[in-house]
Amino acid sequence: MHAVGIVLFLVVLATAVATFARRWRVPAPSLLVLAGIGVALIPGVPALHIPPQTIALVVLPPLLYASAEELSLRDLKVVWRPVTILAFGLVFASAAAVGFTAVAITGLPPAMAFVLGAVLASTDPVAVTALGRRLALPDRVQVLVQAESLFNDATSLVLFKVAVGIAVAAGAAVSLPAAGGEFLLLGGGGSVIGAAVAALVWLIRRRTTDPVLETVIALVTPYAAYVLAESAHTSGITSVVVAGVLLGRSGHRLSDAHIRLQVQAVYAVVVFTLESVVFSIVGLELPTLVRDLPKGSGWWPLQALALAAVLIAVRVVWTLPLTRAVKPTRSRLSWRVAAVVTWAGTRGVMPLAAALSIPLAARGGAALDGRALVLVLTTAVVVFTLVVQGLTLAGVVNRSGLALEPEHTAREEAGARDALNRAALDRIEHLADLEAMPPVAIDRVRRNLEARLDRTEDLDGATPDASYRNLRHEVIAAQNIELHRLYDEHLISDTTRRRLQHDLDREEAALGGR
Image (cartoon, rainbow, N blue to C red):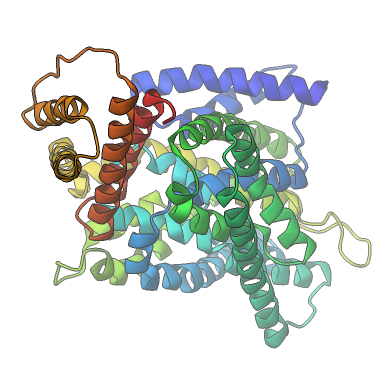
């Protein structure tokens, strides 16, 4: 009951915080972290101890799956090279830089310092996605930041396991071939299992038309991918991400409008609830962990700031040479692009879950020296990135000049709607030539589409009959084909495609069945 009460309290807190966040136009994750810290500082509030397995198994799979489904595979194909460089090279560089800095300024043993480096080396997909929803970034920049956070898990996880093994074994030698094999097992095995789960779900959903069953499948899929991969000793997170990316690309072909709208509504509630809980937990954990610090650790706030600064500096150095891949029209390197990509790469709940999983004792039974400080520094850096970078990210994007103007988005959407309506009119004329539909229904739909093109209101309020509904279904099918043609030919952004697809789904669902 105590755990249930905490979850209910966090959901209520998140609802209130989200309301204020929208009114103040600030990111909800940042406010949730601050609210969690404030609640934890209230006298009499019990200490919160969340098992890392709970976060990894219950919270992360659906959030990662939702983030992966939002990823544009079309744009990922364009930026896969810089994503690969960041997912490998930047993770190693960040881990090394944090490790050496921690040895110099914190007094941590070298082994534990590099455990800290491995924990903080990668960006967090949950935090990156949650903060990035509010930004009007170009597709390539958004996909670069989001894809990097989704695919750098295997690299950081291998580093973390190797570093923890050294710390627990009190200086055991590192086998590079063994570490490479473990990386292939984690990343490659997770990818294979994720692809297999996606293929199985694809086959099942092709034969399913029940909205309730489709919703259950959508909710179970990320957990199945995660559990199967972890049971095979591979990366569950990589498995979930691969399954989400593959199924997100083909989702519109596997279900109809009613099912898509229902699944989207259910997942919106699930994502809101879990994100609310997880970001509140980050804030609630920090005061509790600080109380457990040994004496002589009072410099941890400055140490955390120094580590956060190192992560930002290393990220700028690595992202600057990659700006040509993101903005190919530029002949020179762009500090503005590098600044946005750097500032958008936040840490979140995944580093916290990894730090909490560090063993309590070394192999000989002695307490693992420095574990408490590693937990506090990890949480403090996470809080810094979520609060400071989260609250200022919109300002950095606006000053960089990369933000898409609302007028640009509106023009693109209006042009796409016109293209859909013209494709629908072509379909209407084709059906009229074939005399496949009643002339009254054809004339009525034609007037409706022409009114949309002329930006005038359609005054036809008559009750739709069966022939009209069937014709509208034909028209919407033609518009769906045109929408995906525009997207595949890079004529519209992924954001515009999703918005128009949602509108078409709502229009089709309102017509009812054929």
